[in-house]
Amino acid sequence: MEIKINSVHFSPDQKLMDFVNKKVSKLNTFFDGIISAEVTLKVLKPEASENKISELKLSIPANNNIFAKKQADTFEEATDLAIDAIKKQLDKYKEKHKSK
Image (tube, rainbow, N blue to C red):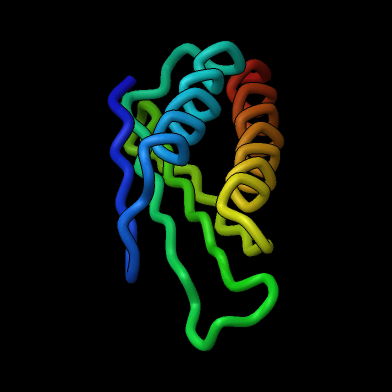
């Protein structure tokens, strides 16, 4: 799986990049057919609580995309929330295709 990380309005440190890569790559254990993942990290202005946004878009076979966008105090927390939402969507996708 190819993982692409974009950041808007800031430059992420290596620790954050490693965290996102590690978390997103674990999604392969839930679904084998993931082609690529695109993570967009944004900082909302003005500086306030819960101003970090993590958007996660997965490309899967059959021209489908799965998308989740979460907002939290830290990028790590927002990424965890987005990954949890993606896991639920992957489960639904697998169930839907298992019944066919």
